[in-house]
Amino acid sequence: MTRAERLQYDEALKKYRDTISVFEGVRMEGNAEGRENEKKATIQRLLASGASVDIIAIATGMSEADVKLLINEITKDS
Image (cartoon, rainbow, N blue to C red):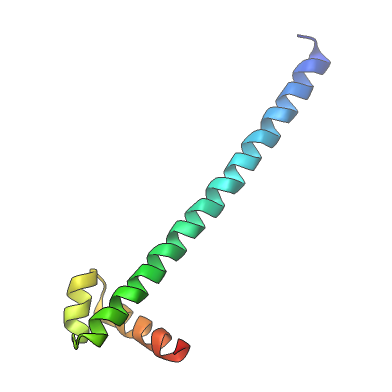
């Protein structure tokens, strides 16, 4: 492989790795957003069934303060 070919190969490889990195970042953001939406849905179901904040915190593994924040977000969205 000539020096010019090697430089061209290295540049193509860098672009490929950058593209993969961007896609991985987007995938991770999507997963985090999905988990957040699922927690909100779980909290809504638990609230509808009459569960208290402390029970919701235990069921979701979240702190009571975080549960209260999400409840406020949910009630704002409704």
